[in-house]
Length: 201
Image (tube, rainbow, N blue to C red; front, top):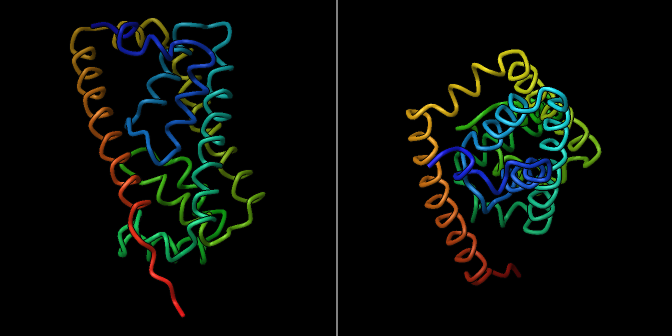
């Protein structure tokens, strides 16, 4: 199974947008998936290499907007269903003390940094949306743009590496992880919506 077979659905300009959006939601799980796609597309298309980080950023902001909106809806009490208590407290402290700086690091840091729980927390704490999305978009563009620029410079080498048999095996492994992780995330989300909410008098 080659790259084109494994990611054929996403190997287009709109695929970069779609995978970027899915990557920032609560349901989809594919570590480094959007990064690998941006690198591959930029290495393959030396003329429009600059377009793919912009599309990935736009998609990422779209997905983050959905996650942020869910955070606003569930509030701080609802966060406990999605974010472990210890991690939630760290996120809450980071958001309250550092604000946009914390958001910048969250948007740039690769996995295993838990981006989705952080975005949920920002929504639940009602962080200013203009500051949040402005910072988020800028830092994502820096991340994806840097990857695309390097892929443009080292295009042939990048393509040879990505299309090599060992890397194909890695891709298959990541696809298996994506299927399992997405199924688990979907089940957790479904179970959380089925749990009765405790009313406070």
